[in-house]
Length: 128
Image (tube, rainbow, N blue to C red):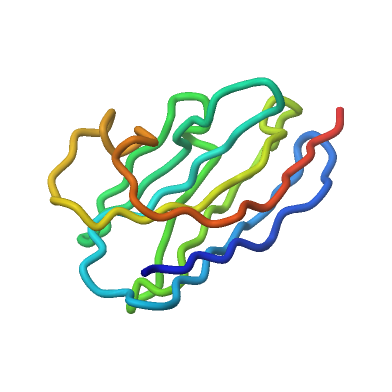
């Protein structure tokens, strides 16, 4: 089993920045992709950013240019830095890990169905 613990959420004003962290524990071997997803009240969960074992990244269009996903060398901490935050970024942010095959398309890499393990989430609230 893989345990994922997110932190770094909070309340910020529009235009502000936050860096979310996801610590990976448990049986950490065999992970291919790591991803950040978010879910706003009344909406489905959507992919925000992903990173594969080689460091290749994918982003949803709404955060391109404002978000950066990164991982430490051991891939035990995954970060999501978000700048120029907007009220529409308000959501619960979840970290996810995939243990199945590698080599997904950008669309697949941001699909909730492609991930096997999930954290409990960290809330981000952006006020105007």
